[in-house]
Length: 296
Image 1 (cartoon, rainbow, N blue to C red):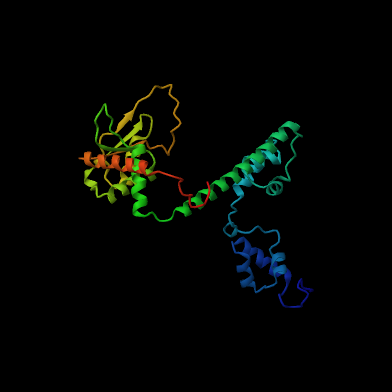
Image 2 (image 1 turned 120 degrees about the vertical axis):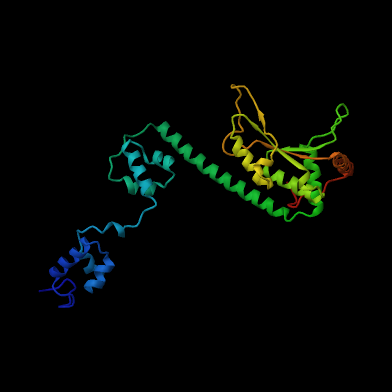
């Protein structure tokens, strides 16, 4: 008998080999296992031996795009066009074409609808470009700062306090040090500033201020973890009440209210802060030096 390989006798009788290969395939063997067991090292012959027999499930590699493919087919069956599927799933038209080419084509759409879809695609691309530019600008600006010196931290802390801290008024003497902010980065810098000034952490008292509709317990855990204390050490949380008609924009998982940090026996420290700020204001004269990049 002539053999598929064209070389007589090397692989024995083809039909006998095929019967054995099919039996092994149905027993759940992979092509490599069948190759090694039958000693058939010609890939063309090996594939012909198991032709028509599906591979066992365990040999199939999961495809990361299987879910997208299924969704694309479902949308196509709903009459969606390539553009509409691309907007919905964010995948390329070439992939969509491969996935749905056996399905019926939808009816031709209105030109105005096509223009709207094209505009959506252009806008999505524009937003992606802007996000990338925004990220690069922020990263470059962060690199310009570098490590902060003690004087950098000192001046930053004074300015932060005068912007966000409680201040004494001629009509209401309140020479106390109390700082409120919702930005965790600002809180970290403020605490580092107090540490540099020699204010012991034992003199600090913490309290959360938050809207009534927010996750109060979650906010308390967040702020206590940030400043390194137990939740039980927080003072009673101040709940901000508002009318049901009030439309708040500071909502969502990222909203954690504000943290209030008070310094016990802080009258002398407050007077020094006010003096430092006055000195900074008086010290501003002439043209300020250029920022690190040379221009803003």
